[in-house]
Image (tube, rainbow, N blue to C red; front, side, top):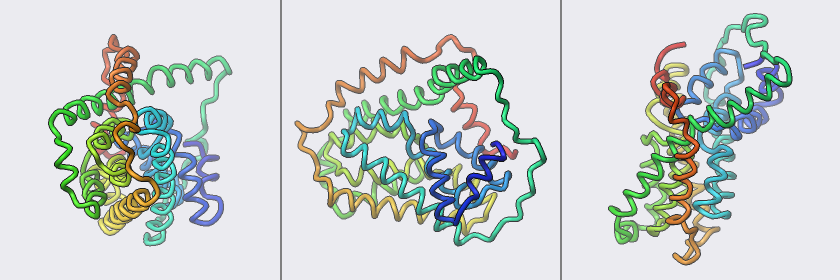
Length: 302
């Protein structure tokens, strides 16, 4: 990352640094596996802990692609609640967890090591188009298709009476707990949540799963343990999980469950989304999607 960006993240107090990390990470269409190398780079470049941790949470929890998909599949109210809750969890986690960490003695980056390659305006436009229509589709479309497949399977196998039998007080923490070990990105989780909502899950339970699923998984805890120790990894997990449950309960108080007739027509929208993703996938590429390569390289030291 350019040195100017690292300096920008380091301005102000920890809360302001965490806010900058959220602003930097939320728009990026990066999945939970792809954010880990970026987080390593931030830490090794000397970025403040509050900004780096907020970036680690905000980036996989929501992005432009997941936000647009949310409006289509789960409705405008819940989509807005998802975006707001994701920002709050990332901000609070980055600020609070950084307060419990010892100040690291990060080595100073070499001069010029992070100088950005600007190129001509034409080259930058071409790179942006390649990233937007090639790499971004490679990284997000497979996860969306996987989420659609899981949602279609769950629609046939999950009985709405099973969800109705779960006590409302336990529904939010249960789905938050299920989301912790799952290895699902924000875009892939959206169709799954749309299916659960159609089966009768509460809005707060859906939000809790959308918060913990993309932000926490075994690889994330492994990287945090390696870089900061088990204590920081445990505090990180408790912070994200606790905030997800609390915000889920709050969403249930604010948003009443929608009747079936008022829910988004996900059975119609999902096939259309799957068709668009399939048509956009570069099937002729001989290399696997970037998300697969990132997943294989997460645990390798850099």
